[in-house]
Amino acid sequence: MRLWKLGSLVVVASLAVVVAASIASARVEQGARTLDIYGFGSGFGRGDDVANSLTAHAQRQLGANVEYDNPRGGFNDQAFLTMLASRNVPDVMWVDRPRIATYAARGALQPLTSCIRRERINLRQYRKAALREVTYRGQVYALPAFTNQITILVNPTVARQARVNINDIGTANLRKLQRANRRLLQTDGGRVTRIGFDPKIPEFFPLWVKRFGGNIVSRNGMRAQLNSRQAIAALTYTHGLIRAHGGWDRFKAFRDTHNWFGRTNPISENTIGATPFESFIYNVIANNTPTAPLVPKYFQRRGGRPITMFSGNGWAIPRGARDPDLACKWAKHMTSVPAWVSAARNRLEIRRRQNEAFTGLYTANVRADNFILRRVYDPMGRPQFNRAVRLLYNAPRYAFAVPPSPASFELRQAYIDAINRVLAGQQTPRQALNQAQREAQAAINRNRRR
Image 1 (cartoon, helix red, strand yellow):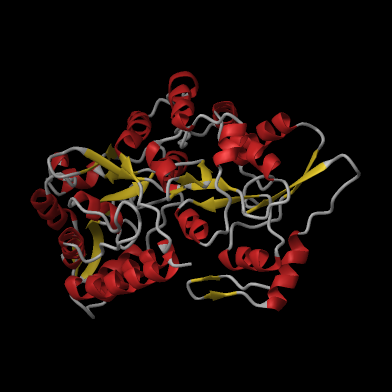
Image 2 (spheres, helix red, strand yellow):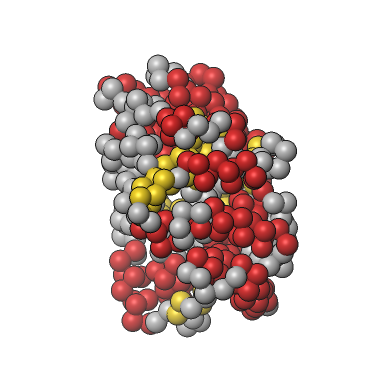
């Protein structure tokens, strides 16, 4: 038995037996087919209306002669590596797109070339940035599903109280943002009582590097660029925004009190001036505190051109899948225009019945998004959220994704660790990123030789 490794993950034989037994499909009577699905167990049948709608559409397309084995829980690297070691893999899996290149580099995934040709899947329907995330060495290894683009939430009430021009709260002019941050924040006896501008590092560090004109890894994913001039400038600047609050410890202690998912949140409570956030947060705020003031804005490059960063999942087929043809059909239908439109209509009807807001559905399918915005979306009478929806549907035009790399995990961990060392006062940005560069490049070199 060959043992697969991913970073520090090591597969042990005893665990292989347990997991293999737990996912083994009970093949039904002769003539029926079973599709083994992995990583989607937190969605379908678990109260997620979008997942249920997508699944119902795909099942209708595949017909009544198909059974489904979909264990509970999301994707887990250790469990999947165990499946690979035991040669008992699922037919199709729901996985974060940054993982695709790492597994493709190890030969764990099937390229979808024949799948795309056989099922006549038009790749032009997918957003370019999302499709690049699942492309490794020229071959597509997954079909992208959701997107979760990043924009900036601005609290106009806080801006007015601090006498800050909303136009100055953004990333186009960093000097103006620096001044706005100092005026927006509040402290009391050395304790932070209101955050000015939260730059969201380390999470959004690649977006800040892009804002400064760089990338954290080369286009082909083979050369780390964590200590570039742009990366050092991005970390120095964002660290400065946090230090203006009195340092990381005070900043974090107050930020940890924020609850973005409750009936009160930092916007409704006026405890933050502005911050970048993923698209899902607008739906959360619209339903929990629909009268909360907010102004949605693009994250911008120098000079004002919009920019956003994608994240999301996709459908991939492991090498060794029992029924790759059926898996291909599933992936095709789960990411199709009819599936997304059906899910959006269903969500709109549910929200109407519950008297809740519908703030759009954001996918990696350009045609689906265009149709949903024009033919499905219904303004809910709250102008701030209607503006947000328009912005979120337009933002993917300016999207990028971190280039796929055979060491995506290690690359990400390297810059997270580096930023945490800077925030803790252990290293300067240059020192921390120089170390991160060495760690990330060593991981890339190890993984690409496999």
